Length: 461
Image (cartoon, rainbow, N blue to C red; front, side):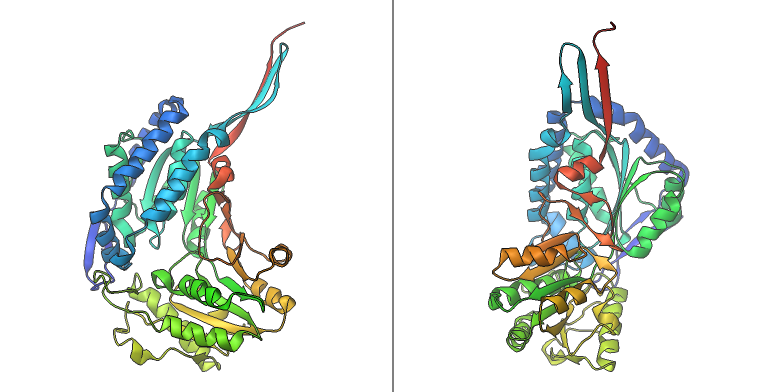
């Protein structure tokens, strides 16, 4: 029997394990979800929304278990309280717009015709969730999918193996029928076999580019709808009129929070030459204040990376950049807890350029490169010189300028004077190798449903 294991970054030992479900049992679980879907969709939308919010509330009641579990599974310090703020914000927002997002578009309602477009749930939605923000990324799809009348099967990354189990437990205890929302422990081969067999009507995957390619290959020829949020290398651009202190505070937090393991974390920063020296000096001071250590210690502000192999990637990229002329500004003596494994000191690099893997490939760790630029044109060219496109963070007091620059950027979201945030009212989407589709907002509901047209002629003459 294949066991799916979570190796804790806290101590390198097995924290949790579950047996992988055999293919035939997984097929039965999907069949149960399909049988349950029609009755779930027939429930009034108000009832579905109420039950989803009850599940969210029940999970909030589990905070004392959830927060330390996250620390053990993927290393986030307990002082940050888990993911409840974003989890609740997203759930509550999609609940508030569900009725409007799903209401019919009335074209005609006369004594002769009824013509309208309704939103029909896809059926069974498969959510493959990542480990870095395992609750928030999952709820982006789980909440609107259930509210729209789909049934949902969730599979979490092995690093956060307990998250799907806990989410489903909370929702079922709150009254969501067991076959409507299921958690399955699946290995890669079984997952691919289910997808290839057209077991699902829509698949949402958040993870690596290679993982996304595997999903596409498995789904080839099935015509299954896909939503893919993949890699990122999100830039920041600090213009000459920026609020320097605010830019440093937000961009450094965006680069290092959660040990840099954020889908829309800041990985490269371009600073106008007039502010460059001051920005670098303040950034180094900001990052140097972290306390790296055991995430279960309330004093720890920077925990280990989720797995030592992720930390090894960061170390390799930094070492490669330094060998090509980059300069590392954070003194390693400030972080004696860096053990060469999952515990990794943060780092700021200067004298970097785009010949270095560090400035063009996803790092996904607490390290950031800073480059000097002369003008907007140079910054735009550098920001676009990347195969990814999720978010860009622009720092200026001129909203018109930010909008003009934004139109030239190959990205999913343009931020001005903020970063590393997911606004549930806006579509979360990306371009290039960051993926396809979009979640949240009204468009997120549209991606989790299909249009169905009604043309009803009331007279035969």
